[in-house]
Image (cartoon, rainbow, N blue to C red; front, side, top):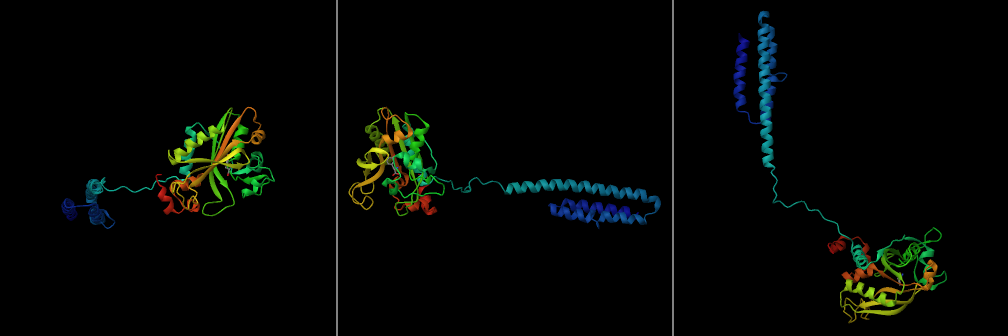
Length: 344
Ligand code: DAH
């Protein structure tokens, strides 16, 4: 019978073809050739019409078994070839651990933040607690309760940002946190208050927003000696053991007596230069003994307690420490500047 012979020939031909098959693409071609719509096995079914009725069953079964047989064989080949291709792919994409890794740029604190943390840590190590206050501050705390009355010239000394909420200002210094601390807690207390302050000022040494750290110690028998000792430890930690320090009489409404503290110029080592305006000294902070009027405003017994306070600008210290010539560089967000402070 012709059809039987056809089937046998087909089987033989394709068994042979399959032996040489190399990849899934070739397998797919063979599959189409045999089992596709116009495939060779599919076409065998069309020949059934010509088979005499008594043989139809037998021949039909034969074609079906050939079809099933090839389907099985092709499936097995597909499995093997898929595994083989996967293996080859994995072999090729082996990870080369000697290649350099993808570079990730880690962030770093801004030099002002770094200095602020550094200074805060020095005081925390001496037992000071960190206190915070709002940047939008009550005029009363920013001025009145700090012994700066409405008509006091000190109010004009500071060019204040007033806001359209009556009785509030953008704090011009961190000193109002002194008031908040004393209203909140009875003595003894030793606090520092780091934070942003605002003044209408803009030139190479002034920025409308800058940072201060305020310090306040209140207890029985606190004297100017305590103030000097604490500030000496602090300044030596920042500028080195041999830094010359001097206390110069000054005036602040909230301290009496008051002083400004200078250190020997870090640029010219006291010889005189542009940075120290040829004085050999750099003004670094304000301080003094808490004025009794301030204690009275917060209800602290002036017979029993004394205290000292100090305030300093973070940008100024940052600029001196890293020799930065213009305060505006700190806030320009220029990466060429910022990247120089990575890892400080
Ligand atoms: N608040 C002052 C300022 O902004 C700095 C200051 C001076 C703070 C003397 C103090 C102090 O606590 O005792 O210029």
